[in-house]
View (tube, one colour):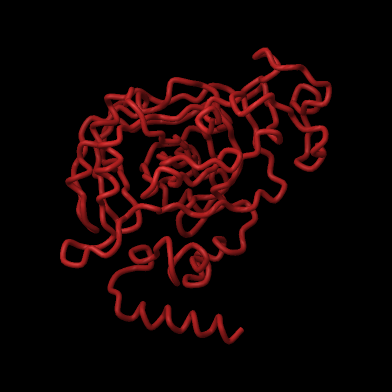
Length: 334
């Protein structure tokens, strides 16, 4: 107990010397890192006490096929906003007074969600960077698109505290020959936001074309992966990565946590560790039995039982797959 008191004392002593709100100084390491988010601010208690936290490691043999999952729909409007180095992450936030907002619907969502922001998570080496993991495999980066429930709530600040308030769209990032020219609208601006507090306007970004060319995805109930870890997020993880070049990855790895006068450490390695699943179910619209895989009478799906529970499928009755190639993203491991 005395050790915790000492740590908290050190934290609050340091806070006195920092101007600004709590949101401006949390980090991904040390005494202000993920393990302490829920201790340093009472409003972030879910970061330490929550049982539906994100990100998670997705175990392929425990996926539940849900044939009622629909395609994910994005409005085709282009958006404009500001790309900013916050000191913790690289974040794009859409203009609030834009005439055409992008709605996200379909998939596992019961409501329409309005796109709000993009977070960039990446590693300083190729073997780390993404927050979500697939069978304990980590990708070099992960791009997360957030939106809020516009049918029930007025804005993100309200929605993140409320049931079904937030949607998180996860795009795994792989290094390779880029196939998405629209993504370069953002990657070409990396050198404009080198230091904390710097920002650069992004115009006419077509969100719908940033998505990988697939409608296969995984989904589960979780939280935002940054403070205050609100357990109000529906996560959709597309089963195909997007690609950026080595040069683009080099450019984003040059971004710094601090200002130009005190640049501190590089901005990368900004991933929260994976969190316990706590009996949550990860659903998918990928029907493996229809893709030439051996059928199994024990394979859990929602044809057989609409009122499933997360604990009713013992491991020996879980879905079986032939190899890591059965998931498009898992093929990156081999």
